[in-house]
Image 1 (cartoon, rainbow, N blue to C red):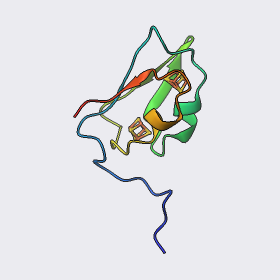
Image 2 (image 1 turned 30 degrees about the vertical axis):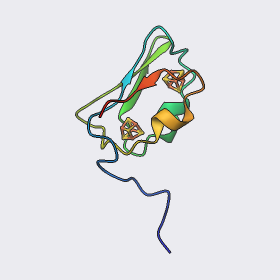
Image 3 (image 1 turned 135 degrees about the vertical axis):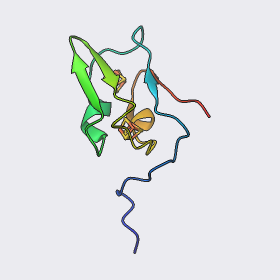
Image 4 (image 1 turned 180 degrees about the vertical axis):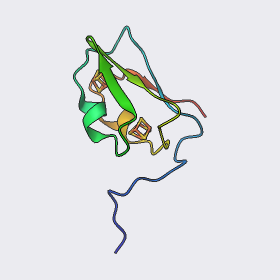
Length: 71
Ligand code: SF4
Ligand code: SF4
């Protein structure tokens, strides 16, 4: 049986971006990221596009729809 919790690289075409106007720094995205690509600075979180494997998980947990994906 496949491990559905495994990262799925390239589920997204590009790394997501966090809308700093919407983000409250709740860290839900940071906690679910399997590769540690998200960090909190002050009361906002940021995605490192160099570390992100584009698994597509973080947009699914944000309570404020602050994580934007394209492509
Ligand atoms: S898509 Fe989100 S959860 Fe997945 S690796 Fe990138 S920052 Fe982390
Ligand atoms: S889950 Fe959404 S609101 Fe919470 S820290 Fe991440 S981007 Fe910000």
